[in-house]
Amino acid sequence: MPEPVRYRNRCTGALETEQIPSEAVLRWLYHSFSGACCRVGLCRLGLGSRLIGWSQSRSASRGRIAAFAQAFGIDPSEAELPLERYPSFNAFFSRRLRPDARPFDPDPGTLCSPADGKVLVFPQVQPPAAVPVKGAAVEPTALLGGADDAAPFVGGACLVVRLAPPDYHRFHFPAAGTAGPSRRVRGQYHSVNPIALARVPGVLARNVRTVTRLDLDGFGPVAYVEVGALAVGSIVQTSHPGPVRRGQEKGYFQFGGSTLVLLFRAGSVVFDDDLVRDSAQGLENQVRAGARLGRAAFGPGSAAGAGGPR
Image (cartoon, rainbow, N blue to C red; front, side, top):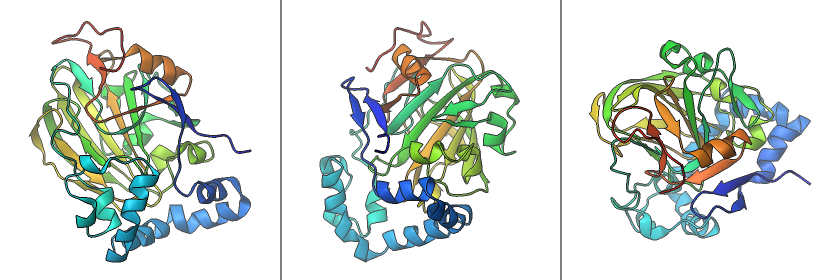
């Protein structure tokens, strides 16, 4: 019997089993010899991702929207538009939400989640150690792929947010500050689900990704990395270099599961205790964009605290 993917619902505290779209196909790709042969075209060359992205952008894909929303418990009332007004499944997948659907904690000392997804936090990543994300360790220098200098983040903290297909797929700035230009790093298109992470070493540093250097109020320099994945059509930036607001939209992923990785300099952030505790056991927490994940170690409200969802 395949091992289920378990996570904690941070709002309720309960352990839950992840519903994985096309789970049987994913397990075949990463747990069989024939699947491994097919991964060359699907993941290394990106052929499958381009084909899937094209098919989900056609008007014929609209018929999947209502059934997908019902099967995965997506609340249609949060969406910016009624479901029937989305011209394709991809348009629904990358939908905006109503302005009040994801409130961001206004406290300037709070680090907010940049997206909906399953979170792991690592308070200190010591060289030459790598971030052990579900058995798929990734070294910060490799993750940045030459698009940014890794030196400020040596021995620093790391936040990983994994977005599954049913999640809201727009991502945001976790605090106010200034953003630099986004730089693309070429790569492959492996799945970022734990089923795949356990089989393909360093997948987060292998996949196509976009790197943006931020300077966030109270937190200092942050490397913000968007990682593409199997079936992800593209990573789209909707923001521009310059001043940014807490909660402002940065961009979105098109169809497929994806991941955000944020690297912080040493001593700049203190993650909430419950997240640190669970992450040390490899247990992800499901959170929503805008939820508190921790606090600035120095600056406004820096008495980092007991930790828990607020």
